[in-house]
Image 1 (cartoon, rainbow, N blue to C red):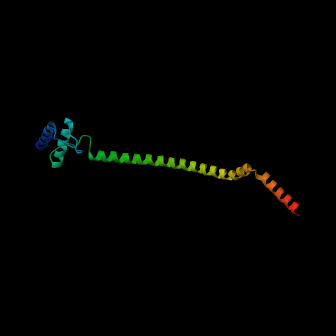
Image 2: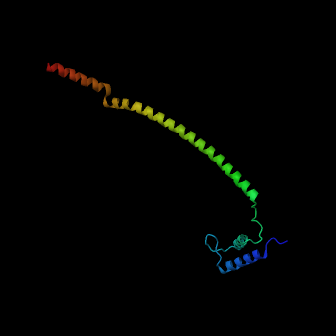
Image 3: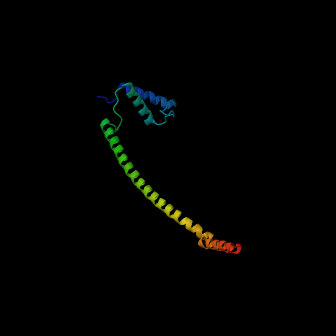
Length: 137
């Protein structure tokens, strides 16, 4: 029994002639230059028409669904693990940064006071005030 119907053979033959004339275009609109691509286009058009053509090589419905399902679950598992580690790392760094900021803000006023003269200057001001009060009286 024949694998391909006569209609499928005619469709492939027509596509081959179109390719040789430079008139055959692929789905994207580019000119087809490959012999194999012309045959593939002819067979797919024959399938659409309802001619007798075997399934595409390596694609059975059951195998295709199993492969795609296993790929999806594997990608989901990998994605969840990666995001979880990323989130925990960002949380850790955020807590370290916030703790560093808190300590920096506590230290900052003390540094400013020390750079301005801090307690020494305030003591001098008080001494001047008391001396000026005493001289006024």
